[in-house]
Length: 217
Image 1 (cartoon, rainbow, N blue to C red):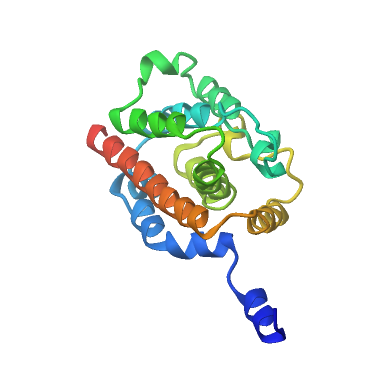
Image 2: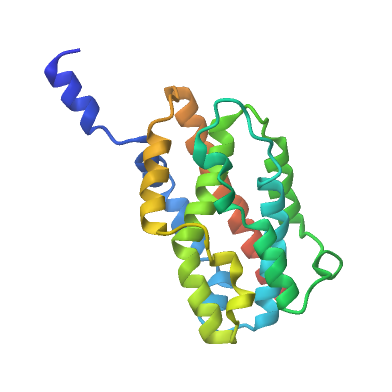
């Protein structure tokens, strides 16, 4: 490799940046759905938030059901990220301990869950696409959601554990380390393309849940 080739390679965007750039349109479209914008602007109610949270309990249960595989990068199986138990704790604190019977999975949620279960345990690019989309989102926009739900609907700290990464000293540093580990994965171009396509689909699944929630609000 020549010096020029090495310099070009060093300056080329990593996997994390490529995924972020490639999904920017889907990300913006998803977060602009009417249900989530109304919820975050205080136009709905705490009950609507409970319904929203219950749908994501199904999603995280599926996301966290994958068994660890040999060769997995550390961030994929970091228990500090797991959210399913925190969501169920929040639902209990919000007066919905029987959330499964009170809030069955909507068809859009069931489709998302089915896709997560469909991804093979050895299909790291597609699994990481959902892992990246959900957990980095929770550490970023999720923190704003927590503040807005507390402000608009009076949710208390014990009802917002979903957004509290208690075992992560610094979410800012954690996100940097996560992206560095993602960039270090030995994915081929085909695998990166598959991850990008799956990440785009992840935003579509989330948007479909928001639409379904809006239709039933």
